[in-house]
Image 1 (cartoon, each protein chain N blue to C red):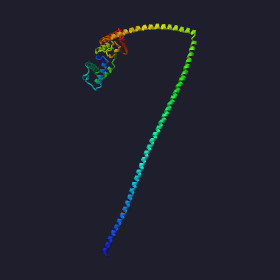
Image 2: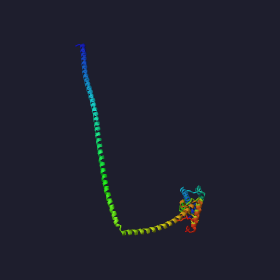
Image 3: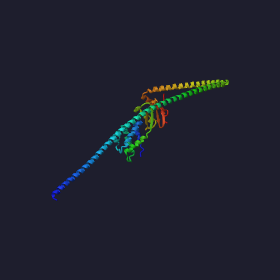
Length: 208
Length: 147
């Protein structure tokens, strides 16, 4: 076989191999591209589904809030009614108890006052019986003795009062003298104490 | 060590407890200043009468104790000790006496009570109105007679 034919065969075979490789690469690229597209579609579908679910959840949440608010308002009204009724009932009961107690106390007081009047009356009757003639005489005697004692006491008091008056007068005179002496000058005071010292010494009080 | 009466010269210039306390304090201060040797220097800042009395006492002290070595600090300490033992008589007065009057009262009492070292503690109480109350050696003499 000539060389030129060999070269032509070699060139054609090389071109054929390149075409085959190109076809193979193109088929692989298409397959990969197809898979990517599928994945993209799947992701978009999932996102949309998730958005729908979230929206639904928000709606449910709003409904739940509305429902609970309504329930609370209804129950609050009911509770306030119940509380008011109970309060009213309690006030009525308290007032009833107070009225009953007041009535009972008044009854007891009346009963007690009656008993007291009865006892007082009986006591007065008994006292009238006890005071006899002899007791009256004894009473008169004790009154006379009391008058005597009172007269003696008054006399004694008068004497004591006179003595006290005299003493007070003397004291007043002393104080008057002291007040006069208070007006002395320091020099006069000094002379006075020197005189007193001399007097005490002469009387032997200081040279013991 | 010494039986010398160091106080008598001093008491000639002391009449009241206030003066005595003041002098005691000065003497104590001097005796704690360490070694003092020159009396003229040591007593230089004292009033003339006190300084003179102290010098007189110091002279007597050194004369009587000429055999022993004498320290001026020890002398001052002895003075302080003896001064602390001085008799004090308390006199309560209705008026505030002047220094001369206080001195006169103290001298009169020293002369008539035969106690030349007597010091007077003066207390002023106007509420006793007149005269005074003397307390001496545990006895109390009321001098407020009204005549």
